[in-house]
Structure formats: C-alpha cells, structure tokens
Length: 343
Image (tube, rainbow, N blue to C red; front, side):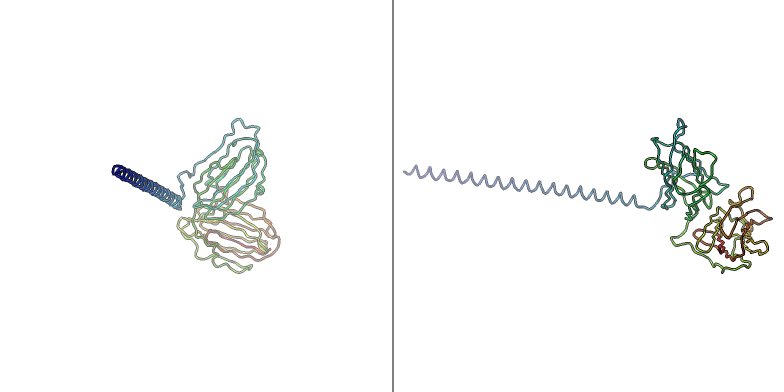
C-alpha cells in the first residue's frame, strides 16, 4: 500500500513538472514571436521613413525653381527629316503658347498619316529681330492666324507670333518677334508636336504694363521726356490693332544702358492729313530693316503707315483718311512706345 502511494505521488510530480515546462516553453515562444514582429514593424517604419525622406529630397531637388538652359542656343536648330517625304502632307492644327519659368513655349501641333516629322527648322534672324520657324511639308494651316496676321505676346521681350507669307505651298513659316537676340531650344513634344522654347530677352515684374504719363488726345505737337541720350536704343518690332474707338500702333524697344526710349516727337500735319512720328538717335531699327523702308496697310482712319530714314531720324508717317486726334506715350514691362489714334 505504501509503495502505491509513493508511486502516485511521483507520477503527480512528473506530470506537474511536465505541464510547467510546457507552459514556460509556450510563454517563451510567444515572447520571441512578439519580439520578432516588433523588430519587423520597426524595420518597416524605418524603411517608410527613409522613403519619405527620399521623396522629400527629390521634391526639394525638383522644386528649386531653376530652369535648365543648357540646351538653349542662338544657333540654327532642326528636328525631323524631309528625306523620302516628297509626297508627305501635314496639317497644322493649332499653335499654343505658354509663359514658362524664364522662357516662352510655342507648341505647333501637327497631324498626318506619317509617323514622324518632315524637317522643322528654327533660325535666329538677328537683323530682323525675330526667330524664324519653318515647317516643311505642311499643306494645311488651321491655327487661326491668317497670313501677315499675328498673335500678340508682349512678355519680357518676346513680342509676337507672326504668320509669314512664303512662296512655297508645301511649307509654313512663323516669325517670333523678340526685342533683342536670345537663345532658344527646338525639340519634339508628344506625338507630332514640335516645341520651340524661347528664352525671354528681358525681365519684368509680375505687374501689368505700366503706362508713363500719357498725354491727352490732341492734334498738337507731342513729345516724350527723359529719353535716352547714349544712342543705344533698338526698335525690335511693331504691332497694331483696334481697341474700342482708337487704333493703337506699338513699337517694342530695348537698350543696353537701361533707358529704352529714344528722343521722340509726333506732329499732326492737317494740310497733308498725316501724323509724323520721329525717333532720333536710334542704333538699330528692325522694323525699317536694312533698306530703311517700311509700309503697312492699317485700318480706319489710318489708310497706311510709311517708314523711312531721314537724316538722323527714323520717321513713321500715318496717312489719314480724315482729320483726327492722337496721343503718344511709353510703357514699361514690356518696353514700348505707343501711338493711339482716334477713329
């Protein structure tokens, strides 16, 4: 009987010990597993933080606000190739222009059965004050800008987009008027889109164009004060249009010395029905060009404007259909001289 009791006690001790060992093992295993999960979570958190830091660094790098101008130059540039495309035809569907950071972007959107471009060429015409872009094999133009028509830009020295006449029916030519020589970058966009980026020749603040002391409308002699006496003013281009009850004619000007206004006078000559504007001491006039001759038909009451060189003055005569009043003034940002003639 005594031996049976001892055996039962020993068995109970063994069973109890085994249970305790198993419970202790399970607890340790659970703790190890929790430690491993915590370690993995910490690792994921660290990786996530590293990714966030990297994204922040990349964002900071891409948001410096500086534009890479290393591909811009004043040399002639081309994209595409006309070889083997004598029968190819392209439609110019639209032209978009956008102010960018330090340059102006022009997008020429083409359509064709062709998969790539015929030749597109961009050239700086320093003597004319513009960048010429020629699009070969373009036989249809739906841009909405008629021949000898223009889209006014007037942004930091990029003046206008002008649709030039060309004797070649299988090409289109546009001139981008600029106040002074500048660099540009011609490249391919998405699909059959040609992009021409033109660096702004000048700088201005974000405010609207400032008009400096415009005269009242009159038929008397008018002049501009505080003009440039160093003789380095350049007239880069012109534009005109009708705004309400006036016809507005604008010359864009620039100067290395900072004052872009040449000595300027205007006079209405009633006997001849014309307004004569004279600019003195101009270094270069891209409107008159190398021949020192200019003529353009305008709109009522101005039949046409004629430009020429007379002595030391650059002279523009506005031939009128009737007597009227006018005023002449200058603006800054962009730098311009403007004459307004009542209709």
